[in-house]
Every structure is written in C-alpha cells, then in structure tokens.
Length: 182
Image 1 (cartoon, helix red, strand yellow):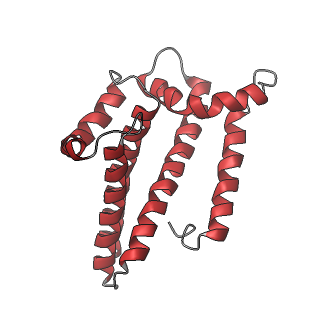
Image 2 (cartoon, rainbow, N blue to C red):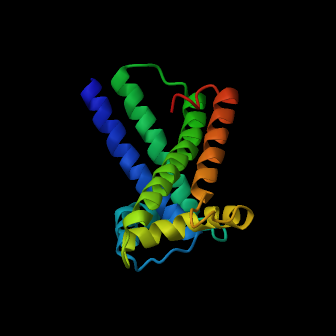
Image 3 (cartoon, rainbow, N blue to C red):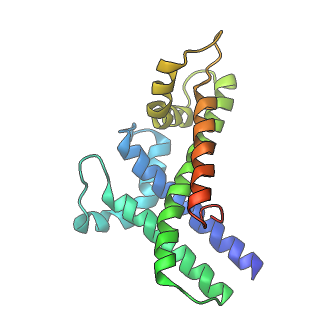
C-alpha cells in the first residue's frame, strides 16, 4: 500500500506542478516559444483545450488551468482515500484540495527560487530554463529589490522572499489545522 500511495502521490504532484506552471506562465506572460514553456503547454493542452470551451479566461487569469489544478488535487485525494480504505468527507476533501493547490504553488515557488539562486552562480550565457525561472520569479523579486537594494553585489531579495513565505506558512499552519499536513 505504501508503494502504491507513493507512486500515486508522486505522479499527481508532478502533473500538478506542470498545471500550476501553465497558469503561472500565462499570468506573467512568459515566453511561450521557450522550449520549457512548450513542454508545459504540450503536457497540459489535451485537457485544458476542451475545458477552455466551458471556462473562458477572466482577463489574465486562466480559469481552466486553475480548475484543472483543483481537479488534479481532488482526484489525487480521492484515489489516496480509496487506497487507504478510509471514509470520504466531501466538504473536507474540497477544502483540503483548495488549500493543497496553494500550498503546492508555494512549494514550487520555493524550489524555483532556490534553483534560480544556485544557477545564478554558475550560469554562463543563455539557458531557456533559467530564462523562464527569471520570468516567473522576477515579478515577486523586483518589488523587494526596490526596497532592499543589493549589498556589495549580493542580492538579498530571494532571502527576504524565503522569510516571507516561511512566515505565511507558519501563520496559516496555526489557523488552518490541516495546512501543515499537506
């Protein structure tokens, strides 16, 4: 059972990351001709294209991607609940799914910031993955840089954002009981 749960959890989480990336790429209007962006679009297009006929975008918000992210988490929770043989409380499951999408988006942001920071030490020239990470994270880092400029060439904006994200995570875990379980 543990091996099957691990596999189900991993597969759904990986696809959820791709769906969240699709939403995020459209939100920041990233370069869709970038090879990394093309992968994300191709991995999600078969499901999102039919959903867009029913759920049109609201401005820059791609509602089909958001709903798909919610559905991926909901199906994952249903499958894991069935594997465990536990009862299903639909209200808790729905609320848990909404929180899980936000939590997974935060985890994805954390890893992108960390990878971007590490790659900035070694990056030489153009790299499509680094360019997409820059386009995705720059809208969050630029306002911090305006308040806290680089100190001797050292950019502290990633550190400040990490501290803010950790603060938000701790704050939510105090007031939403199952936030820490996700």
